[in-house]
Length: 165
Image (cartoon, rainbow, N blue to C red; front, side, top):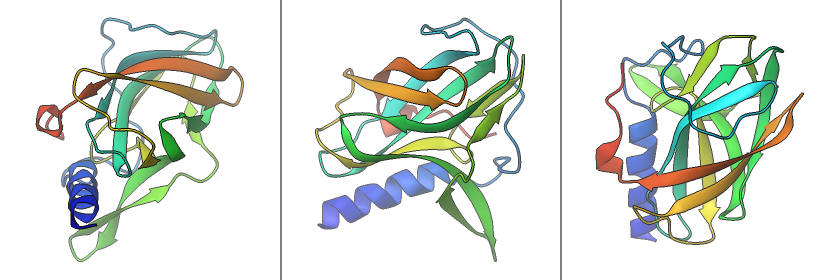
C-alpha cells in the first residue's frame, strides 16, 4: 500500500510541475510524425511512464489536427481498470491538482495539442499489469469524429520525462 501511495505521489508531482501552462493546449512546432494517423488527427511522440501493476501511469503525446477539427473525448486500454483524460490546474496557495477534462479536449484543424507533464495527460488508473521500461502499451484514443485511433505507446522511465516548460 505504501508503494502504491508513493508511486501515485511521484506521478502526480511529475504531472503537476510548476510553470506549465495549464490554461490551454500548447502550440508546438511540428516534428517527425509517429504513426498512427486518422483523417482528422495525427499522433506523435507517444510515451507512458513505467509503473507497477495496481498503480497509475501517465500517457503523454502530441495530437496534430487534420483537415477536420476533432475532440479527444476519452481513451481505453486493457492495461488499466480506468483511463481518463486529465488536466493540471492551479488550486491556489501554490498548490496544483489534477482533474478529468469535462467535454473532451479540442484538436482544431491544423493545430498542435501537446499532452505533457504539468498540463494535459492521459491517466491510467488501476494498472492490470506492470508497465516496464522498454515495453509497449496498446491504447485507443476515442475521438469524436475519427472514432477509435489505436496507438502503440512505448514505456519510459520517470527519470526520462521531459522538463516542463
